[in-house]
Length: 346
Image (tube, rainbow, N blue to C red; front, side, top):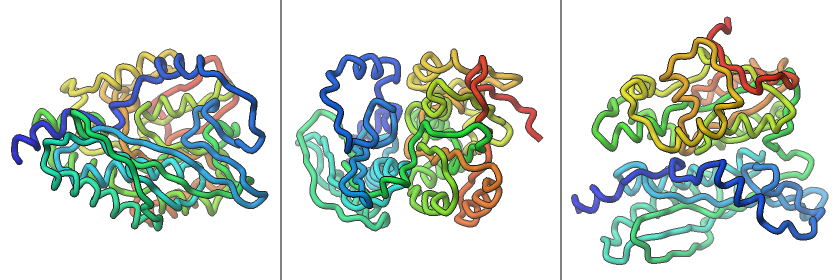
């Protein structure tokens, strides 16, 4: 079993995503077909999930997400992968209803490992108040696990990622640095408190955060995953808005910046920097913080654009839930530089 655990975690989570630049190129070549007016949100907006209108009161939200392990414990991996997949429903303002397992697993491996992965995932689906309705498995050379998830949302209350308003304040509900810490952990260099905090963060559903946000006027929302905080913020700006980020307000997991200073980085973070770095201007930001902002997150928090006069009350509600939420910036009218990151916020 010990040898299985050594090969179980080669590096995965949302760092395994194809780079945004390569993915955009492929998606641009797909035949579009005739537009279906009931498809309220599709892949053209780079949003977190698809939304399809059924009635004037109900639309269903559909997503899927799966990846290789990023931690050595199968049960914890199952929890993280499920939490991450469920998050897309919350990021659209939806309620989770059903989930299907997606499994790739080597036939020669101990099936108890698979059982632990599925147990972890199932527990998170139950915690979300949803039903695990089935799934699909194939034999593969490596482990991969995730969920296909369906939820519902009112057609008039969808949170899209690119509908923010100038003046909105940006609230982030989880700390950053998961990718850096998981990379450091694989070589035995992650601080214990940092890795423990990363696992707690990755296994925390965005359910409570979404329920808090639903009580306020949310103009746009996304969850921060493999394309990094700055990559997902770039998608939110959609070529028509700009943002100012206050780096001193951004929550960071313990030890993540120290690991970045030791160059315990991911190739995915470099892809993120290559893709979106040209849209960002850093002002007095240390290298380690730049890396945190480009770091691919697995099961990251929500990034919500909220009406400015409601932001402090929403923040207080989120913190009462025990979340390390913070107001990290603001949306402004389109400027020459799309995203400005500085340390000078009071």
